[in-house]
Length: 188
Image (cartoon, rainbow, N blue to C red):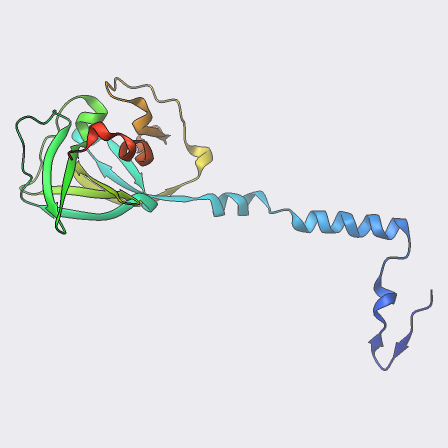
């Protein structure tokens, strides 16, 4: 087929493949262009989480998507009949909110208060909210899901599904979906 050119214009049909070899070449180029480079895949997959400390500088994290707010308060109301893993309740924006002793859930020992006020991470999923009592906030970090070790060896007495996995041999990520779906962890 002859290419027709008039004053810097090309007829579109002249750009179409004219042989099986041309079609194979174009298909191979299209497949290659459709692939996302591995480094870009990992960049897109990064997950942001809030890292915090409990007793003995143990570090934990919650996904940023589950985070509602971090608050400081000087009062948690402890109710005598509550199990040891519930630190108490607070009035948060007009809602009576259960506050978990996060260290007790992780290790079986209550958190040691290091300050005159309490630091509480409010986590949420749809209409469920709960507070996590922590000692200190380290800040926001990111990780790639491929870095997460899901087999977690720990002396945890509670549901091991509360923990998503381990990062860098030192940060345990909490599984907020499981925590919030466990009705034993909230006061109604």
